[in-house]
Image (tube, rainbow, N blue to C red; front, side, top):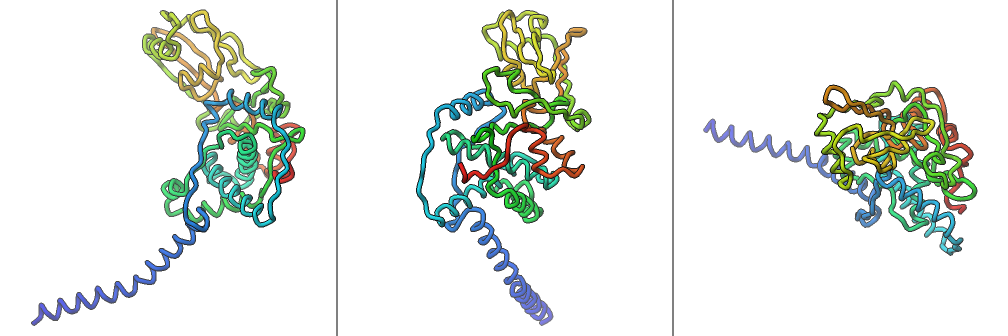
Length: 340
């Protein structure tokens, strides 16, 4: 008798719990549906876009950007106001996903706003030219990465995107090559020193003193002599390498990044060597000592355009995003993408 009463009590208790939790399940489901509708659009289907590794394809991107400026013809298109708005809204959702991929959501809002303008500039430039678009972070990846902070982080990015709606960086009436990187060597680079024919006067040297004390600024790599040679032979299979001394830095730019390096008698680009040896930047030195080879690299990234670390420090000092962009892209102006 006692057992049956206890069993009925447990069943009654379980039923009450299910009734109480049912509204929570329904609310969670509805929130999820609204969130998917907001991110993916009315049909709840995520678009699939191509991506590009801007670091590894920097030279190709620069050449493509210059070619676009020379060959693009002005095209007039007709569209309704509603159609234009739907298209702009879709682009702004892309911007949020790109910015989520390109910069940490923990950065100050003004730094993120600057990155929004950079992302929008590069996206519109790619869309106009029909080239690969910047890499995006999918909503699924955002939820996986942010976890319980998803709603807060999403709203922070959304507010930054909305605060810069439609804004792009222009020079001489065209989209600029809005290069950026994580940490400089202590100053950003002048593009004309690496590519003399690059018509990018807005990418010039900017002092970034804060970068020299940033976490990750200095990277040191030690290799056994033969290990180092094998790594170099893999990168340059035609080179007859027998000694580390056959690899010699020939020139640097004003920001101390390697521009030319000699590998067994052949001269290569410093950025190419950096990627071949998987170094964080082309601002590096190579030293042979006691049967080992030591490589010291400064900064993270190619060093052109905006340094995200210095942009963060400027924001903390009270700089607005427009002032941050002006600091790194000399002579470029902020305009509206729809005006082009």
